Length: 202
Image 1 (cartoon, one colour):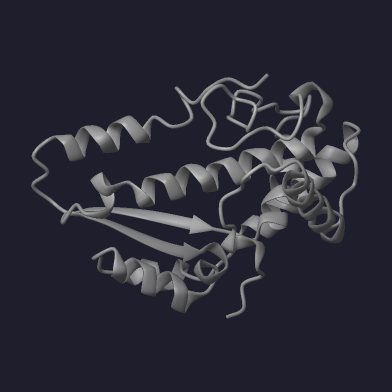
Image 2: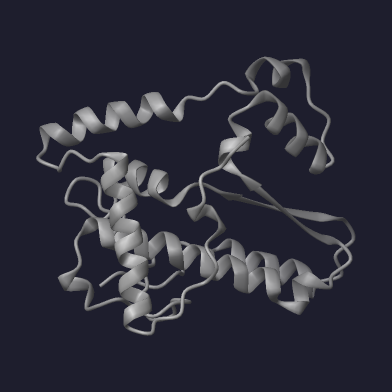
């Protein structure tokens, strides 16, 4: 059973504390979404919810104060279902914050929603930096658009194969995510809108 979000969501009480105080500066909250099967693929090879690296303390739908209902007893779910549950629950939690009048109507709190895929490009990264009210440095122009995650995932995949994790394909991850969503619908489990289930088209 994964535990609840004391460590995982420390920024939530921090944000509430700031808003409850007399906030004298603008606060920008950057929400980055990525195609869910990509996230599942990446987190699996990083060992999430496996014997390799764990992260079993991260909050899934089976956690006591999750924002979505669990698909099944967590002991019956494999690592991939737990990762999917975790990712969807994060989205539900995010949308709850976005729709909370305390944030939504606060004149100094600004939410910026971006796709991770757009940040992989120089144009997308520089655009987001400017939305945050920041001025890019000369070094920013050099680094923007240089993606490193793909190489890291290959490294994790090789390491995972050595310790007995399954070899996954992106097509398989897509099928598993869609299966999870379909099973939730069959069981009447309400899920949040999932805009990141659509592939990003630049």
